[in-house]
Image 1 (spheres, protein in one colour):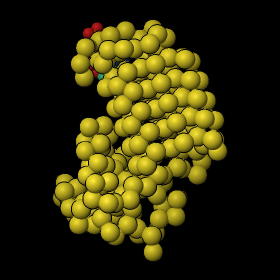
Image 2 (tube, rainbow, N blue to C red):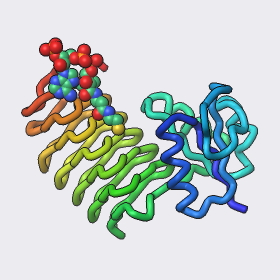
Image 3 (cartoon, rainbow, N blue to C red):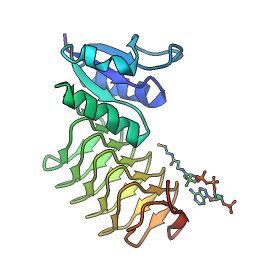
Image 4 (cartoon, helix red, strand yellow):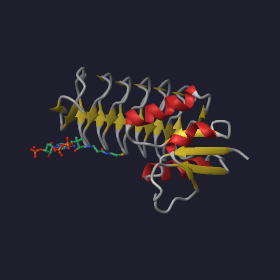
Length: 206
Ligand SMILES: CC(C)(COP(=O)(O)OP(=O)(O)OC[C@H]1O[C@@H](n2cnc3c(N)ncnc32)[C@H](O)[C@@H]1OP(=O)(O)O)[C@@H](O)C(=O)NCCC(=O)NCCS
């Protein structure tokens, strides 16, 4: 029986669990530091810190929204020889020439178009789109309904907020937060939080 361990039993973790089930995982369990995760669809087997104990037992996915925490756990799993899954919802559209790195999740209604390169530990959330030739850095997050037009580059750990749009041929450096509904029309070279149409700097640091 194929087993998947999901780190993180929050709302995001429950969406990930549903995709895992649709991807054919039959034995699914959560690792979460909170003993009271509410109503999980699959058993909580232990804490995130127990990861290494389970490394030989199955595949892993880190379903934690914070990019730095997601990265930390994913690197620990990889260093311990664990296998990181790639989960793609059956109702997502992913071009055959797109590349998706380990530990990444593509959710329902998302589109990843030809020759896009999605790094490791990336979230392409519900109905988010990544168009042709985009490069999405490791541990980035394209939120619900956000759109990257063609040939956009997103740096490591950058979070594109819900419903935001990045027009074609734009580069955004790592560790940025693009606010919900923003439209990015110029390259962003300084890490920070950007909001509005056109997107402007709100805070210099996250
Ligand atoms: C951008 C964001 C991170 C700002 O959060 P914050 O640093 O706590 O900022 P504040 O809420 O204190 O707001 C500061 C100012 O920015 C404005 N602002 C905040 N978010 C904004 C947005 N998305 N677009 C336009 N203006 C925004 C606020 O109205 C406020 O303006 P004011 O000073 O004139 O009152 C947050 O609002 C946001 O958009 N997060 C994205 C959430 C998301 O997309 N989640 C998706 C999960 S899948």
